[in-house]
Image (tube, rainbow, N blue to C red; front, side, top):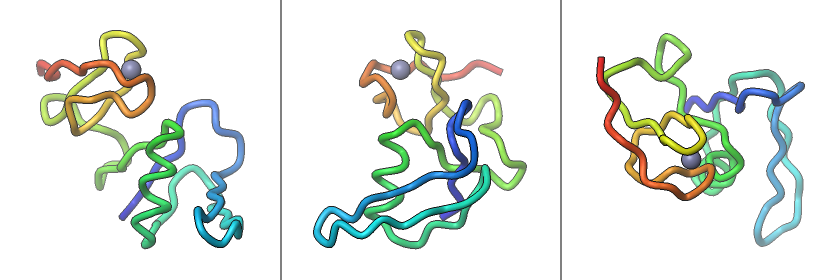
Length: 88
Ligand SMILES: [Zn+2]
């Protein structure tokens, strides 16, 4: 799955394995992440699933009215708020 770093991330993302404690580093703003656990951890830190164009497109997702975080689900993965469907 292609994951994009949140705005403000400087040079990549790091995930610490829940069981192993091993830190996996993903360099760059966009990384292909195969490990579902890492995907979940990165999303929890504010990263998002990148579309082919690299950004969440308008009209296909939801946006959090509290923190403006774009998402494909109705629960904001950044602040836990309820996202509203984006209007084109
Ligand atoms: Zn939010």
